[in-house]
Image 1 (cartoon, rainbow, N blue to C red):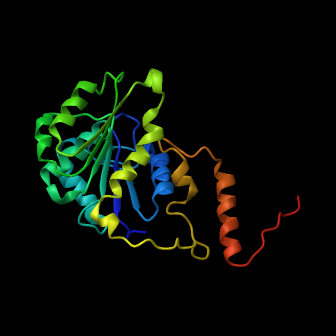
Image 2 (spheres, one colour):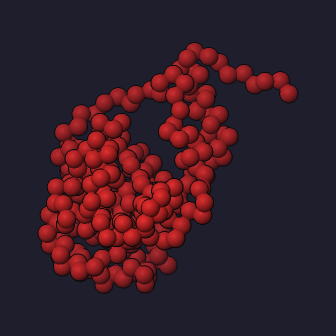
Image 3 (cartoon, rainbow, N blue to C red):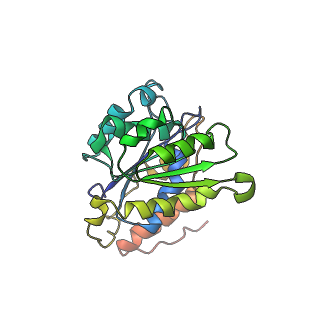
Length: 245
């Protein structure tokens, strides 16, 4: 529901990165805390978005603010980023301090992190000590600079994909402290309108476009689409029957 507090996700700069990187994360956060408005973007030049890939690096504040305004908001409850997207998520509130109530990043890239002292909102940081591309030493400097950090380190060879299991619940802890989330009254989940479809359809959510990769549903589209049809028709009081072979 676009009326709910916005959580905006920004992917990294890998050649095949896109909004699909966040599919499972969105579902995990929603399962723990409904009534949030999740938006994951393909940055310019990535996934399905045309444009120059340098834009998210050079103008993170302008781009992210433009997305937030396009979603009908003045600010986001949380900006969430990975890798180079994490750098954008941290730089955006430096340029526009009222843009977010919190930030959450995993495997972050950080430049001149002493500037992060100006980021007053709660910040979740997650680093893999074995990830040479995102040095944990930078993370420790970020932790020292930020006024309100929640910081985690893990070692992939010992802990596995720790961030995939723990980032969502740690994000939810921070989100519950955001004013826009606290002030939002819990509502009953709306049922699907008659004959409604997911935006873009199941194919847009599950299939890759070009050479992007990400955390995708592992359910076959035909099975998922059939399940959605079943839900819609049940709401209409129609019983589905298998057509004879």
